Length: 103
Image (cartoon, rainbow, N blue to C red):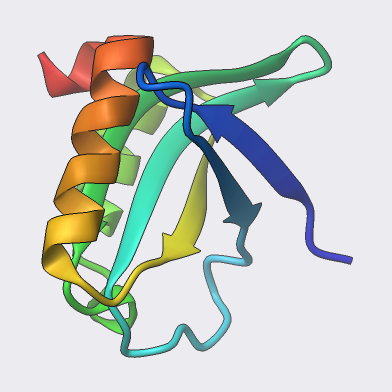
């Protein structure tokens, strides 16, 4: 079963992200993604990004970089077709979590 994790932005909006199997086929759709260490206390967001095409796996470089410092880092995704929506959500999460790899 796929695990969903709810993240709240600075605005108070709540976003549901889904953990993924990195080796499975991913849809060629626009998406937001976060890289986080997920613990029983909740997620520690270390990076927030967005992509026009989740299947292109352009998030892999950020994930590899994150795992050099955060060994338990995982990628979580949320499909969002519209670029403006993705960018606003990404900024909302960055303002809330101040991910160290977005600095």
